[in-house]
Image (tube, rainbow, N blue to C red):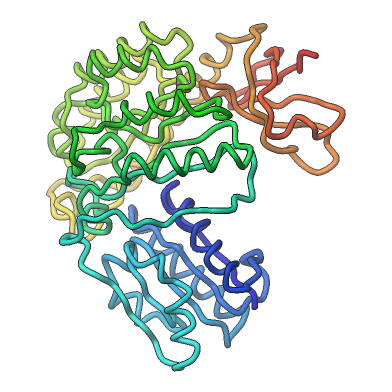
Length: 435
């Protein structure tokens, strides 16, 4: 029996898809590419934007065309917030939410045996327990994602995620460290701690445990050389947190601090809980503490009510603080959120213009950041050959600069290698491996 996966959205979804794939493998299934004919197709959905929903529906249709008799299971955020809508899509056999993924094989087999559609979506807002969905056998041997937290209590006005994932739930510290020890024994050099709102890790646990406590414990685990944190709320970085993190030897100096807008009025309508002054202060504190730090972010343009003056404030702020990379999104109204009902929705052409302007600024900032390290020696964790037979290998520095280097064999994959930056391109650097 063959199973194929299509995963949309965040790193948490990627982690959960790999964990579900492992459950199928244990039941004798072979995981194949999604474009192949399979007996089961699993679509792990995202609902952050309307486009995520649309892509999910398109992928479901593609699966049905590949094999009319296959079992199609739709899981994740889209099916959690719109189970009835998903269940009416032609060809869908199993609909699971965000907290039932560990039972995926059972429900697929039930649908196959009973020849009827199964919808199993629980009310996540009442669920406050972390669903253990661990990975035992990793295929990759370079970087590993580790989900340590789920859910969000913030309720930003544009976001459906709290309704799709429920409130904050954290993985017990003991289990986090057990899984990291397992990753180390599998040969991993770097782990990425991820979650829906990673900064909230521990708020639901007894004992006042925090993300920094976990980071300090990882310092004692042999074999793991790098620890990276996924997207994090900027308010997490208090003076005490930065001081404690400055002593960590394994922590990667790369922080993805969600910003969304560089204008206080816009941030207030978004229900973001910081000001641009606070954000800039945190950025400066991180740059003062970690001299090589890379700070990346997300930006939404065209949020309801964003005037030309507000956008210019955002642009001027971004131009001033010069972050190393920005992911730019045009606002997409999500039914069920406050932002979707707001007045003064911004015209699509204006969104496009603003998006292009910020993207161009990002190109300049990203190249300028990489250029700082020209002729410097850095450590790169090489992950793969750029394409088969190229003798070009790519990987990332501790502060998340993508580096491509020529090498005579693939013996460097999975290893951290000293490399000299010899050229700076727009989105990556060319390196020379130091023998």
